[in-house]
Every structure is written in C-alpha cells, then in structure tokens.
Amino acid sequence: MEPLRILLVDDHLLFRKGLAQLLDSQSDFEVIGEATDGIEAVGQARSLHPDLVLMDINMPNRDGFEATRRIKTQMPDIKVVMLTVSEDEDDLKEAAQCGASGYLLKNLAPETLFQQLRGLAAGEAPISRAMMGKLFSQLAQQGQALARPAPTEKLSARESQVLALVVNGYSNQEIADELNIAHNTVKNHLRSILSKLEVKNRAQAAAYAVRHGLVSLPRNSPEDTGD
Image (cartoon, rainbow, N blue to C red; front, side, top):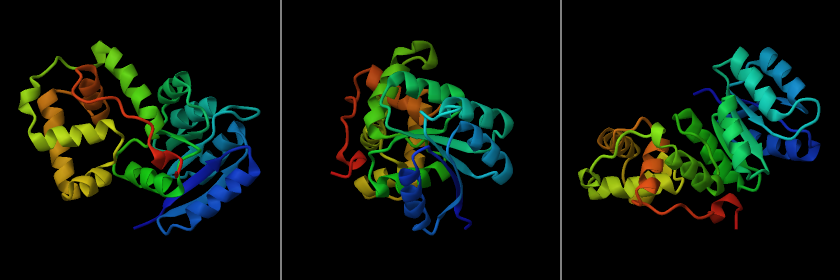
C-alpha cells in the first residue's frame, strides 16, 4: 500500500519541521513538500499533487481558507485538513464551506493525529473532539439539513452504543476497539443507523442524536492534548 503523500502548510518553521519528522516516522505517511503561506500552498499543490494538504489558517500573504478554496476548485481530488490553534466556530464553519475534509487542533497528541489521518483514507472526517460538540450543535440547529425524525426504538442496543461513540468523536477503529467488535461490523452498524434514522452520513446521524437528546454532547477529550 502506498503511503499517504502529504503537503505541510504552516508559517512556523519549527512546528512545520517537527511535524514533518513525526509524520515521516510512520511508514504509511510521506511528507513530499512544505509551504510557508497560502500562495506557496497552491503552487506546491499544483506541482506536487499530494493526497493530503495539512493547512494552517492564519498565515501571511494568503490565509488557509483562501488557499483551501483555490486548491479544491482547481484540484478537487486533493483532500485538505485544517491544522490550527483556532477553536472558533466560525472558523470551523468557514473551513467546511471552503471544502476542507477535516479540522484538527494543534494541541492533539501525535498518535491521535496519526489515527485521524488514517481514518481519512477510510472516508472519515478528521476533527478534534474539542470541536465535535460545536459542529454537531450547528448541524442540529439546521433542521432543514436533517431528515424527518424516525422512531428511536428502531435502533438496537448495539446501534445505540455505536451512535453514542460517533457523537463522542470516535473513529470506526476506535469504536471497534471500545466495543470489542470487528471493524466491518462497525461499518455495518453505521449503515443500519443511517438507514433507520433516514440521514445521509455520520455527521447528520450524530446531529440527530444530539438534537433529540439521545446522546449528550461530547466533552473535550484528554486525547486531544495528550494529558
């Protein structure tokens, strides 16, 4: 299996070099380029065509939002994940509007970063747990984005457990480990949950659960900080 080819975009040299070393220490990641601002990011993305761009938000010359918008417009197959210190809900919303596939905070532990990026290859959206509640609260308030309510009695006990873990930011593999079930079993449960709740994806399923009081909003997890 080919490693995930990554372009790092951050104006802080020490952070960028340290992150490159961390990622390159993993056999399934390969840092193929670096950029110091949004202008360089677009140019590097065009010349290197990485699988993934890890993008800071606040940078000189062109910020991460505009760079992401241009990359996704010109090269829609390249995935962009914001890697930032900002916990601002407006920044999270704008990142999604620009086409970012995920939103991670810089204070997360290295192993959590690796796990989040590996989930990206499986179709999951990397997002720090500190931001999960904010995201799902926004989605839950957008009634038009959710399908009509379905009777929650339709969910089995195991499906309810899986849904609770989704709301708390667990990846498919983390859910499998937590419940001691196979990864494919988790995927089957998720498909069933989406069908029963009549929603399109795991984010809408989580928003439904929060909106209807089925699951409490997640608290910030120590996994984001490494404590």
